[in-house]
Length: 371
Ligand SMILES: [Zn+2]
Image 1 (cartoon, rainbow, N blue to C red):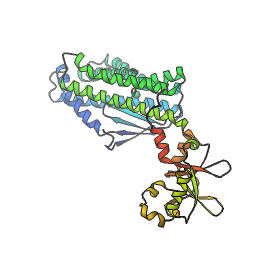
Image 2: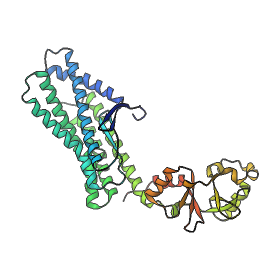
Image 3: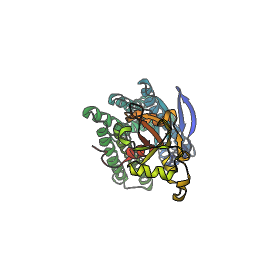
Image 4: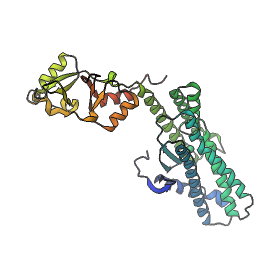
């Protein structure tokens, strides 16, 4: 929904790039205007100054969120996990961490670091407010204490995409030894929480307000999207180890470069193959036929076009061993992105052709993902 908006770089903190989403300005405006009546009630005789106080609160709230995210980021980095950056957006922040194969214990600590810091910050703000007698600083410190307390406790709720959800996922993963089960449990909890959040404005306070309903709907939507995404990513991750060049490769027939496309297609059909590899006079593979280019070729042109003109010359990254599988296969494909790869057997002979589209389809296939 908001991903199309360009994030504004704020600079770097301990080497970690920090961005702010343009949606933040909307939320800052909503807080400044929306909370002004509460401030005006608590601190009388402020006049328009009440807006300055609520704006200061909006800024302090986001500084707290930034510190919360920084706590995640620095903990992750201490464990050797690369951190791509922190983004502050509408309703909070997000730390992008590259977690290729973390252990559940590490995941748990990285997730817990954020809420732990928020709770400490909340307690510190509360203690700092005690000796203060000037009304505005005292008010700001107390509101800050409450906000950090809420951020800390809310994020500890055991539901993805919240920190508590990551902790629940890590705990289930640790106990069952099954990462995917952890994801499913924590993501389902996230979907349930999204539903419960929708009810909050109707059961808390003296009846629902428009502001409360809109706010609850936004939070619920964010939770639902995050939980559903986590579920999809988890299913995809669970499929990765089962991807193998051997299983996914299409059978290929050898064809010579000057053979017409129509003839090569007939040879492939006769041998039950769905792919073609161009070989030289000594049967060495020199090219892989691009199936998209082939299917785009009109029927009547096929007898007049040579196979070589719809083939891609074999280069280093395009050749894969028959035993490559899982994350290794995906990494090899990422480093040399082409539509088709040549799969070679142990003795260097052609085993088949691996189409990138077939790997994508196997990754995103519906069903059979949940255990
Ligand atoms: Zn967090």
